[in-house]
Amino acid sequence: AARLRQAMQDQPDLAELSKHVLIDETPEGVRIQLVDQDGRSMFEPGSAQPNPRIQRLLQEVVKIVSPLPNRIAIAGYTDGAAFSGPGGYSNWDLSSARANASLKALQDGGLPQDRISAVTGKAGSEPLYPDNPMASANRRISIVLLREAPVLPPAD
Image 1 (spheres, rainbow, N blue to C red):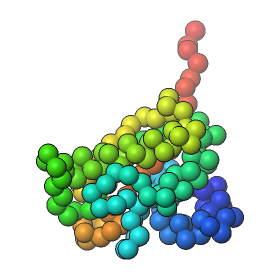
Image 2 (cartoon, one colour):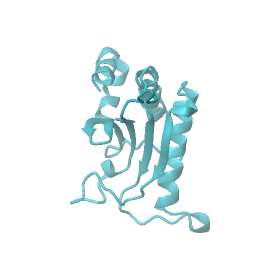
Image 3 (tube, one colour):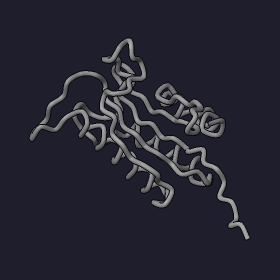
């Protein structure tokens, strides 16, 4: 968490992007959340194609997490607005597609496939702001560096 914050402070072109990043510790591990801001979405509405802003953020995230041993879980979230695309495409599909697009960007940046534990779509089921399910910040990508018990050598 500290390394990502420092990287953002050290690079002036990332200063504006730092408003999109929330970092906290959860029981599962260190969670990095890339969140939409009012008027500054990471994805076009109804699209899973990351815009250049989130691609840049994901490039920085992969530089920080690649040297670490932790496996990673990625989740995509939407806001609470009903969404229906062609063929019944829903917020569930959209949040899953955005999580997968984020995974691809991390892998393109050098994150090995064997470090991925899970990629999930959560739609609007777990809003960041439960009292305001339509808030833009509920649209986010969560990247968790999983806290796992160390592998113990086999008992003799």
